[in-house]
Every structure is written in C-alpha cells, then in structure tokens.
Amino acid sequence: MEFAKRMDRLGTETAFEVMAKAKALEAQGREIVHLQIGEPDFPTPKHIIDAGVAALQRGETHYSPAAGIMPLRQAICEEVYNRRGVEPKVEEVVITPGAKPIMYFVITALIDEGDEVIYPNPGFPIYESVIKFVGGKPVPLPLLEEKDFRFDPDEFRSLVTDRTKLIIINTPANPTGGMLTKEDIQVIAEVAKERNILVLTDEVYKNIIYEGEHHSFYSIPELRDQTILLDGFSKTYAMTGWRLGWGVMPAELAKKVEKLMINSNSCTATFSQHAAIAALKGPKDEENAMVEKFRTRREFIVEGLNKIPGISCIEPKGAFYAFPNIKEVGMPSQKLEEYLLHEAGVAILSGTAFGKYGAGYLRFSYANSIENIGLGLEKIKVALEKL
Image (tube, one colour):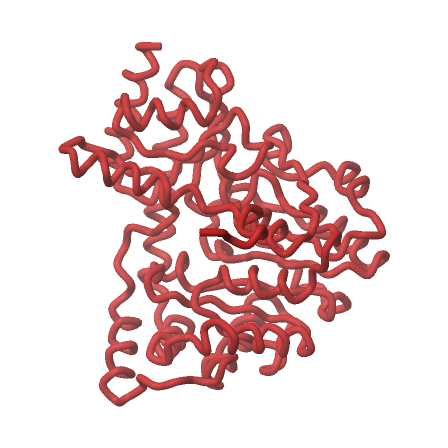
C-alpha cells in the first residue's frame, strides 16, 4: 500500500506505545508497574456521571451543533471569566472531543508550508507532530532544569523571526511539571504584541498546582485577539474517557475550527457535554481531594527518586509528572526506558519522547497509588544496581 508522504511527518504519543508493550508483557505473566500514562487514577465524580446518565435518559443522544451546545459554551465563558478575569464571547468557544483536536485544528487552520511555530521542548509531543504534518517548521524552545524547567528569555527572543506565525506555551507543563512565572508570560506577551504573533496557551493542568500561582496568557486583555486558550476536562475531573476539550479563540478562527470539526468529527458527544456542565458548575470537593493526593504522591516520588544513585529530581510545581535527571546513570534515556520495562517491570517514558531536549531525563506519572509508586522505585533501584 502506498501512503501519502505527509504521513511520514506525523509523530505519535509514546505513552500509548509503551502502554501497549507493557500490556503485552503482562499478557505473558509479567508484573508491570504503570508509571507511564498521564491519566488520573481516580473515578469521575458521581455528580458528573449522574448528569451524563440523566442526559442519556432524557434523549440527549443526537447531533449537537459542531461548536458545542450553547449551555456548555456559556458555562465555559463564565469559567474563563472567573478564573482568568477576561470574559469571552460565546461565538469564540468551540467544544471538541478531547483537547488534542484544538491543537490539531488551530495549527491546521493557521500554519502554511514553511511557517515557523515556537513550542516548548521537552513538551507534549503532539505539538511538534502536527506542526510537521501540516508542513510548518517546528522551532523548539528549550525548557531548562536549572530554571525549574522554564525558558531563557534571551534565547526565546532569538528564536523569533519574520516567519514565526504561532507561539505555543504550556503551564503547568507536561512532562516537566514546571510553571511559567508572571515575568515569563510578560516576555512572551511583549514579543507577541510587537511582532503580531498568535499565542496558543495550553492550560489543561491549570487546576493541578501545588506551589505558586497559575498565570494565564489569556488574562492579558490587550492580547485577547491574538490568544487561543486550550483547556479540557480530562485531567481536572478525571474524565479522560469522556473525550471533552475546548478552546477559546478569536471568532474568525473559531469559525475555521468549527468547519474542521464538521469535516472530521461532526460534533462532540451531546450527553458528554451535559456532563461537562455539571463538572464546571458542581461541587469541587473531589477535585480538591484529588489534587491533595497528587501532592502527597509528588513528595513521595521526588524523595524516592533522589535516593536512587545516579538519579536527581527537582520538585514539580504542577501537573502529576516527575522529570528526573538520569545523566549519571550512563545510559541514554530511550535505552533506559526499555531496560527498566524489561528488567525491572516498570513502565516509564524516555525524556526524548517529549523532544530532543528531553535527552538525559525520564518522565514518571505519579497518577498511581503510593504503594505502586514505592514498588516501582524499589524495582528501579534494584535494576540499576545491576548495571
């Protein structure tokens, strides 16, 4: 079979590949500790499930408008205003089946062959994948461990050219757990304003923060017409399987994204959208409890990683990932990922799964129990002692 050449430019999300390898080993009888997948291990809160079930029972099983049902879009406008101080218009909101389509559709709608996109590296791999797929030029912005996995402002400015069409930021970040400061946001804002560059701000982990304050690029009123806000329900509300994401963007871009929705998905599942309203408007007790459990696990895993010879790990400020430095182990990240899966029975991800600047690091998801995290760390310690 002969495929289109553009398929060669499309990357993947390695977490799903490693999960498949781990499941294959489990099918052979191996015990595997899963620390690779970025998925909360908590159930979706009951009031959200009840709202979804009620929607199904009253017949919310048909098409919705491509951009989403009006009550959810209105609820998102309220949420954005309450959290970020800037109130969008309903026509600027698009609901999608998961947050990834917002990335995909926005990049597809904006980037022509040869246009440059600055994106965080190490960062979520789909950014680079889609930029390449549409023929754009990905320009990695290094996130530095010595700066708590933030960027160097001078280096950022040096990457901007007349071909820069879009800047992508992610705070709190996957895979590092790092958070941009107000000063970092201001640096990006100054450049975006001066050069009239659009900014896609990915804030899917905004509610999972342990230290400091979340600063949203969308909170800058004068740059509202240059900002695309990406968010979703998967992480905050443990709703990964519901497939619910959303974007807020200039209305003319929202129309293009809506057209891409029509051509690909038609719409997001209607009953899921009604459940999403309950998530936004309902009690936050379970959400807050989940974050506190993540906080406990964060402290546990960071302390445990730092006790393993050859590994050092700074404490992430948000999300639910640890990104330890393994350079002293003396094995490349990708090889160490494979070694720990097969030798220790622990599934983690190579830092290079998140870009070239992830070399020398691994990503651990602590969306697992303290017991399993502890078991995984002990298995890794024993396996490394054999090297």
